[in-house]
Length: 298
Image (tube, rainbow, N blue to C red):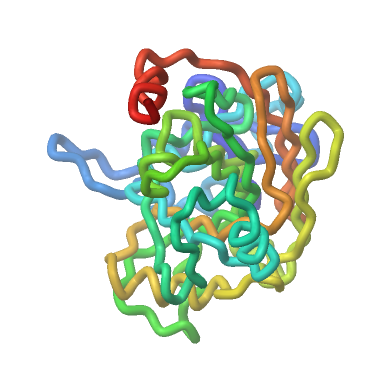
């Protein structure tokens, strides 16, 4: 099952090149008053929603995907948990290029640990990456995004995949510099999720998915999730030792080698086997804080 969010927050089931509106089923979601829960209500209820979704879809007329604006399939991720340098060749790439490491110590992931990105950085496939700090290098990073479906804590890796609701493509956009990763990667629009959520039962082997990214038609990154240093189950186990994972939390599993700069006017096309593809435009967003870095260097 492929579930998307589109236009003004509608929900749809994706069938090849079209989407069927199933927004009406959200009426059965539990209602809350302030303070609201810190997880995604739709993802939490997905097991109970599957039958209503499948029943509602045939009653809706198909809409071509080309006519809708795709939002992030996860409306309210409580946490974006990211895995740094989790492909061996990318680890070597970063260590060998001063433009990537900026004299920061680059450790293998089991020593470096994980880091968090701000949920406010999330956009969908039809939205645009708005680059701040144009005087600095900003890079693309394609990643498999794992969406947690059920609250879990101190998970054993043997059981880890049972807590996964589904998968989507992730773009972890990064402004290069000496600061902590969470600062440089949490800028608004710097986490792209999409084009839709593919439920876990639709993916036979998430540890064997090809992924690639093009910029303006040029292939920049190409790899397979079997090349991950710390696999999906181990990442869930590791993250759950530090956080209670909640429905809608997203784990970005790391990017392969081939990272490179993007600039306003570029168009990136990200593809992951069995999850689809998304094309995302890059624009400029001026920031009054941009001159701060010049003042610091001077």
